[in-house]
Length: 427
Image (cartoon, rainbow, N blue to C red):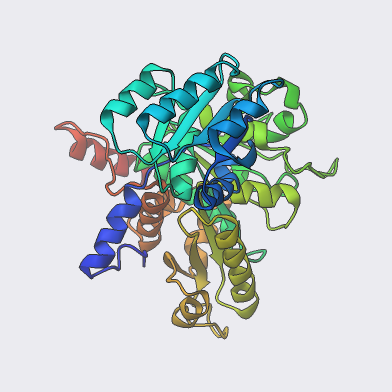
């Protein structure tokens, strides 16, 4: 049922391993970047990097002319946070250009040099003179993104959290249920500290699904942006399990929720800094802020039902996201509520052909299991631990969290006996 679990060829297996090991590039903060290029190819690579989601907050300006243009530009004006300098000259000329640039460069400005010489001696000398990064041309888009973002990620810093966005192709397809069960599996089976962020402010169901009644939630943060920091966000979280917390939606209609495009940026930045995994439950609406959150996510799962409207919407969403995120892994999608009795459905194979991609999971329609879990405020793994659905959510958790193995808590010699006693208590 899971995309990479179905792969049988060596090529596909290698692709799955590469996906699991894919480097996580943390987004850059709000900084100014100016590039002085000597070739059209490098200018194009930097321009493509500027359009990457991880540099969405950065202001990037590109000019031609290399070091000469850079020195001239800063004779009477302050330098930006980052200068990217391309040089086609040899090592000695590069060092001379940097000497001239240092005379007009403000303290604190970071310099990235793009050169042609593959010379370790030159690299060490550049580092000794304060150059932050040296790239060997030709550079690709991801090379530029990685170099810029890496300037603001300390080597000993805590890894930045991954954001996983789950969105429905159509209302009522069960995207929230899937998001909440995946989050549960990430926290329990992968043992990753995780936060579920319910962005359906008016009608969110995460608090119901986790049987929580928090007095505060995400609305307290989004309407008080000046108060947002890690401590404030931590006080708003509701503890679901040892590894899972909830940033709940108010689910009230006493106000309208017309948000600015960047309204949730401070919340996501704060969560990224403190939590390894953030699962975002997006409402089924298309606004400036929902689009921004979706595009900025590290991984995306689109949930669709097996009918024509879902197929159309899923294709539109996937086509948009592939264009908006050209340097990212393509979004995943899954089919939910498959096999409703007497309902005409589009077959998964036809869905895959239209979307030019296989579904990551096919989740069968089982109203008894899902209905019981929903009404009891429980997850599928609690209601039917050994079911195929619980296993599907575990595998989706592995896929989206980029983990190839499930880490299970260690048990002592008495664990089997204690487990049986617990089962007897519940019966």
